[in-house]
Image (cartoon, rainbow, N blue to C red; front, top):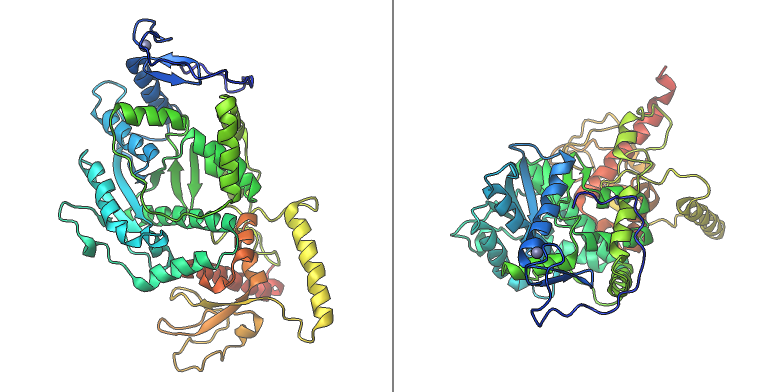
Amino acid sequence: MCSVDPDELTEMTRATGLMDISGGDVLCRKCGTGTAEVVLRVRDAYCRECFLAYFVHKFRSTIGKSKQIRHGDKVLVATSGGPSSVAMVHLIRQGLNETSHKQLRFVPAFLYVDESCLSENPSSGHEYIKKVCEEVTALKFDCYVTSIEQIMSAQVKPPVLFTKEWNEEHLLKSQSLEESAKDLLISCKSLSAKEDLAEQLRRDLILQAAEALGYEKVFLGDNATSLSVAILGNVAIGRGSQLPGRVHFKSVHRGIEMYRPMREILQNEIQHYVKIHSLLTVQAPSFQTKGQSITSCTEDFVMGLQKDFPATIPTIFRTGDKLMSSSSEQSRRTTPEPVVGVSSCNEICVLCGSDLDTEQGEASAVHAILVSQDLSKRKVEGGSKDGNETTNIVVSNSPTMNGCCGSNGSAELPENSCACNDRGGSCGSGGRDSKREHVLSQDQLECYLCYGCRIIARELRDIQQLPQKVLGLAAEQERRKVMREQIQDFLL
Ligand SMILES: [Zn+2]
Ligand SMILES: [Zn+2]
C-alpha cells in the first residue's frame, strides 16, 4: 500500500455506477474470501478487516514516514466532534494501545474550540462542549476547552481542562468579547471574506492555545477531501502562495508545528470508519454563512466532479502536494534581515501569520491592484482639498510596545501630545496604564498583511474591529519601520 507512485498520473475515467454489495455475494477484492462491506472508488469492494487495515495503515504511515513525531512528543490535537476529528481520536487511542512496533509513542492532549457565540444557537454551546469532550475523556485523554471570542482579547486566556464536574461557569465567557467577534464578522461585506476571516481566527486561536499550554506540535483533522477543496478554494481567494502551509503534512506557523495526519484519507472512507466503529459525531454550533461563497462553490464543484470521476480528489491532492512556496519558511530564514530604508513588508502577515507574499513583480495581481489604487487615489486627491480618503483605524497601545519618540510615557501627558501621531501613530511611548491611542491608516495596515488578508481588510466596514493583537502587531511594525527610517543616515 506504500508503493503508490506520487508522480503517477491518474487517468480521469467516468464512473459507471456504484457497485451493489447489498446482496452479500460480493467478495473482497483484497483477500478474495471476506464478504465485501465497503465500496471505495465506485467499484472497489473490501471486507471489514481489509478496509480497516488499509485505513489504519494510511493514518500511521502518514505519521511514520514523516519521522517528525518522536517518542514522548507532546501533541495538542484539535477536535471539533466532526467525523474526521472523531476518527482521529479513535485512531490515536488505538495506536497508543498497540503493543507492537506500530505503537504510536507521542503524548496527546485534545482541544475543543467552542464557536457557539458565532452560531445561530449560542445557548447550545455548553451542551456540545460536554458531548465532544466526554467522548474524548472516555478514551482517557485530557481535553481542553476554549472559545473563539478569546481571539478578540489582547490577553488570551489559557484553555480550561474539561473535568467530570464541568459546568457552564468553568469557561468564563465575556459578553463584550462575544459581541466584538460577532461584530467583526458582521462588518465583513462578502461571504467569502467572512468565511476566510473566521478560518484565520480559528487557526490563530488554536496556535495561541497551544502556546499557552506549552505545546509545540498540533494535529489538525484535515482530510484529503477537505484539503482538495482548500487547494482550489485558497487559490481562488488569493491565498495560492500559502498553499504549502495549508495542505502539506507539516507547516510551521508562529513557531508552532502543525500536522495533518488524516490528509491521505478521503471523507467517504472516514464515514465508513465512523459507521463501522459506531462513533458518535456531532455538528457543533459554529460560524456558518448562508448563500454562495467561493469556498462553497468550490466544494460543490469538486464534490460534483468527484461523484462522476473518482480520481478528481486524488489528482487535486497530489498536485497540491507538489507545490512549493517561493516565500517558504526556509527561504525566509536564509534571507538576511534588511538593514534600513526598506519597506517593512518583509515580515509575516499580522493577521494570518503567513509569509508576506506582496513583494511580487509587476506581472502580479497584487501589483495590478496597487497601480489601480494609486491611480484612484490621485484622482481623489485632485478632486478634494485634503486628499485624505483613507480610513483611519485607531490602534490601542499594547503595554509591551516600545516608544520611538523618547517621551517618558507619563500618564499625565495630554492625549495625542506626542508628535509621532502626526506620522501615523508610530509612537508607543504610553505607560502601562496609558489609554493613549494611535492611528494607522488602512494603507499602513495593509503593508503588514498578506494578499489574502488585504482582501479581507478591504471587505471590512470597520477595520477598527479587528482583534487587538492584530492591530497591536501592525502598530509595532509601523513604529519599527519609522525608527529604521529615522536612524538610516546614522548607520554605517
Ligand atoms: Zn478482505
Ligand atoms: Zn495574511
